[in-house]
Amino acid sequence: MNRTEFIITTAIILFVAFALGWFANWLVHRFTRVAAGDVGELERMSQELHEAEETRDQAITYLQQREAELTNQLSQTEAELNAAMEGLRDARREAEELRNYLERVQRG
Image 1 (cartoon, one colour):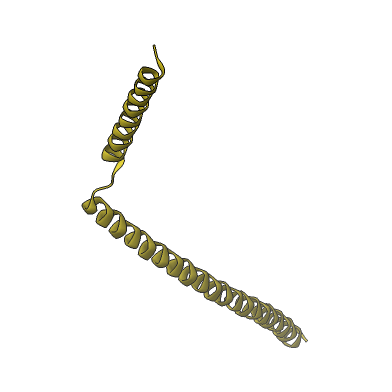
Image 2: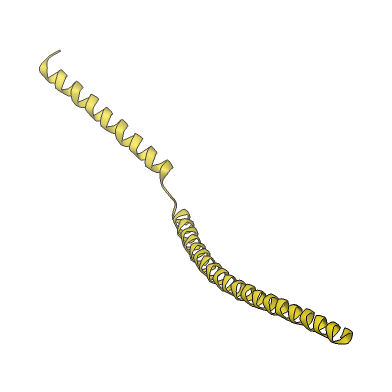
């Protein structure tokens, strides 16, 4: 094999390798390419996901505020209940004292 044949053979091998690489690249891009409709669908899904996350955040904020309001209302109600129970105890004690006094007065 002389020098010219070697160069031509090497050039043909390199060209075939280049062509095979280019063809493989084309195949990979052909099968992994995203269609325009798919891109639009992905964009729409992304927008819906963003809106859903915003709605979720708003719901969480509302629930936290509502929980704080209800906790405050419960504390106030418990305080009122304790005050009413204390007043009822005092009234019962006073009524018992009056009964005892009336019994003593009626006996004596």
